[in-house]
Image (cartoon, rainbow, N blue to C red; front, top):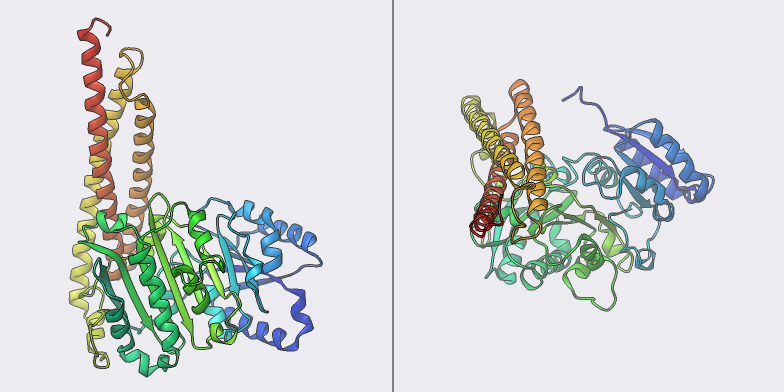
Length: 487
């Protein structure tokens, strides 16, 4: 751990900061905290146009995990977004920041963007700003809740069913011992509104169970809900089926809209201290994470925009902190969200982490299961590849047109899906090898197991679709011969 390379951040300085000694001092404190975990290079921009050219040159010379620029420059510098990749769903990212207020009109017309990163550093404590920025430096930390919480913090989980009532959720959350212990009862109004906004998205605007929930065999849950808190941050996470269509429609719902002041997204935008939205590529799933900081920026500047992060990701990125994990021996930091008042949590369950014999047994067992699954998947994909080759060789120039006119393109699509699966399995094999060599924790092994389950279910769906296409293909060929039109 100690030898891990620090992420690299390039930071374009907002020249307006130099006009305010308070903002300048705040930036100095943020950079001081960040440098403990990251390498920072500062870049001074003489003008918006020259700044973009300077940043482009730096990014072409060296790879950075995160590039930060003042909000007005960020929104104008389209070449930088193009360099990083407009449609990318993983890897280095580009974001805007402000050390001043951010009026809603600044981003009202930003719905033509594929991603949007706005970091409000004006009203945060330096440690809060550093934590927010550092969470964006890696695919593994820019999703989920763990990167925002103390390592010893408990995370409460619950499946929201079709009949989940908002009142019972509010009572359960406000009764958590962390609410009193860390003084979050002072933010009770914001907690209620954030929960109301999330509940509205899932139960009033939502479209049912997520694709990942179905793949993992989850029963009847409309959403997976997590909440955790320490003295610095309180964070809520919901994973559900998106109530919107395209990613641009998702972003549009979270941009300031005075015509829909009480919609779920607008409530979250105004009353949460930060909102992070991740549409999951190639699915209709959506992760929404909202948080409150101890410094309470949304209460200090209620009519301004606070941190808003919109960033499509892949399922593999999401599996770095997989949804649908439930409390158990492998995850002693997870607790079921209670239905009523609960006692203060005790540290005793944490001891299960340090029980070497049980941990080693669980690790060995999960490694063996993961290896077996990968071997099975490789074998089945190899068989499916053979079928695809047979179909394509037998169909070209020998059979009449099939009833579905796009059979050939379907076969190409199947082939593409299998290649993607092969690449994912290869990546999993590499991760398991690294786990064996580096002594992975039961939690990381469970993440690998969840990925394998997901791949297995996807593969089964593709086999079913391929089988039905194969039957249609054979029926069409047989019909052609019977009529004397076949080869």
